[in-house]
Image 1 (cartoon, helix red, strand yellow):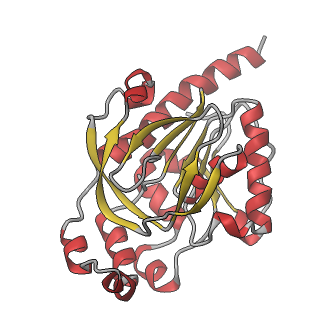
Image 2 (cartoon, helix red, strand yellow):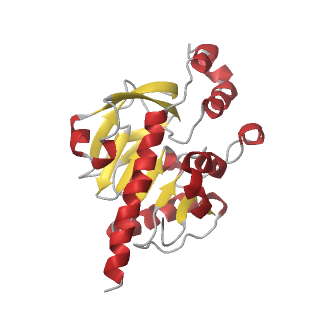
Image 3 (tube, one colour):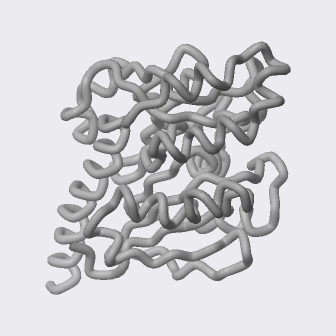
Length: 250
């Protein structure tokens, strides 16, 4: 589909116990992307790998992480500058969790710990009125379930960013930054098994907050609408890249 490989900007790797059971982040996205995964170039920015220059003939997905955006790690700030450069040319971008927060931070928003603490497990996402006119949202129901696990959040989106969905815990579940750039606080790439592994790893902390890890695991499910959003992005990106390719040939 893409004239150049689909870029996966990997912003971290799971703790060893999760990775041994569920694989690495790139495996999780490959599981969602299907045939598109055959055209995936993974750049492990958290290990210092260098990103290719932003271009109009490719798209990028920015993954989650076990780091915090507010730590301003050197690789993270390097990626934030890359995001600004990519946005300057309207390169197609999709951020997930840490990627969502990093896009907001890079473009002038405010990211920090959520005042109400952790959001985790399968939670209901509600589309907001601005989603009605967004092409990527047309196939989604007004409310759907998605996998979540995060401590930090986008407290204030960048200027001109539009919030397209919320949960009862977090009002910025989907942000639109431009015609080809979008991000989600939730995880389209998660399966129930991945989510269960994340819950079980935080079992003691969840109990200390009055949450029931066993109940959270029982309530996990497949989240087809959340997955559909990322697949809609991939399909829409194909059209954008084809138009860009045609322009470059004239």
